[in-house]
Image 1 (cartoon, chains in turn blue, purple):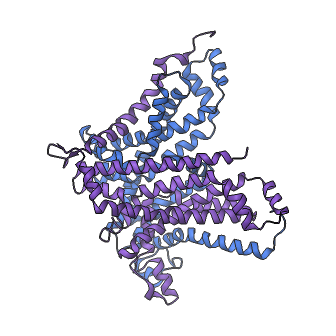
Image 2 (tube, chains in turn blue, brown; image 1 turned 45 degrees about the vertical axis):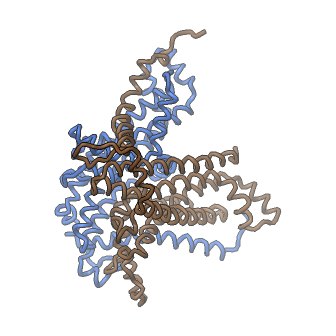
Image 3 (tube, chains in turn red, cyan; image 1 turned 180 degrees about the vertical axis):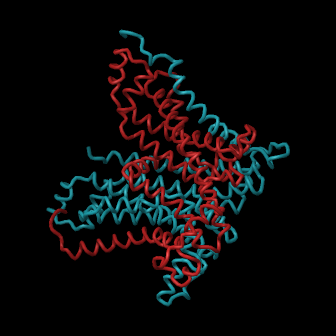
Length: 277
Length: 299
């Protein structure tokens, strides 16, 4: 394995890898190129970089395409979900890992059950449920549903993290007179390390990208989140490839920048998050 | 004998921590799921009073050609969303780790990137790549004089499902790559070195050392990507809405159409229950496989 190999072999393998690099990168790059072309240039120059950046595309997608509005709505959903779902996952996981509650095994399985449930099993009745609560077509309703759907993964994820901690940590703090709230905030959460960051990041990106729930629970255009807005947007501007590409760029660039800054958390979290399915 | 009564024995305190999260989960997930199950035994259009029909919805489902059609499309997508990306990911991870190539981290970050995109964005991008007028594929074909090969890939029932599937391949192979690469890293070099002494070739080493030790990773990739093939919705909804005809309709989309377009809530509920049961059964079977693999783990 470590013995020197013929160089030719390695170069060939790098070429194979580069082929897949091109496969991954081309759709991104060609979208960014197209976003900055005029419709006329796209015909004469479909593949190359734009000769002159057509900046009005940005304003058109942001204003007429209403992507600015959709972005604000998406933030107004994703940030509260991130905070509420993280907080509630911490408290339920804390209760299930450290307190001597009767029937906690059963409650834990109830959360684990939620890991494999497809959204379709909840969404139909969620629609009528929200309607009867007067929460249909509101961002609050969307937030509440997202928090509920985030609980199984969050609780299970933190339960396993808490389970790996030594109990003596808690016992020692209790003898020192710390209450359960103080133990949680002063001792356990700092000892969790990056797990909580990873979880918050996952909640954010899952909510930011979520489509079906927002499609069903939100009807008014002015309340649409980015993915739903984008789906309608591309239908409306179906003949205008540069504008659609600009929309895709506006939606993907923030996610890519965030990913490049925090890629270690994303990769470890999302492979662990695969459990959620 | 306990020195003092611990606060962690207090049931009210424990409940105070547990209940807020459990309540939101129960109210917005468990109750709707239970109601879906109940409504699968009714006929209901969403407005008029519902009528109890027993197992009639399930009986209809078993006779419904469109249900089997959707299920078969989901299963065909397993090829594109699991088998193909799994094979690519395994192959690339094997050459990077067994050949000790540099840049593993770089390839990991790059290949994984499509995973973080919204599938709506992915669909929009690939819809344009397949566009028969100005799309990337037709332009590439045109630049080498082969534009005659271009087809409206998403508009012909012969190609549409495959075109959607290959979009999923692009998204998923990086996931498989990352998981398999971390699996290869667990394998100690000493195992390969002893195989070197035995004169085993790279392929032999891959088959007889690499593969058996990667069972856990196989389980993870198979479970995650299989479930994602069964749950797929966004890609199909944005790229084709199930068309042309019903040639790309999948189960989740068929549930959605029954519930929100045909106003057949009872039947949609029965379909949703069937989908949940299929996913539940398969993911349990696959995670059993994965757990078995842990026996092989090296401490």
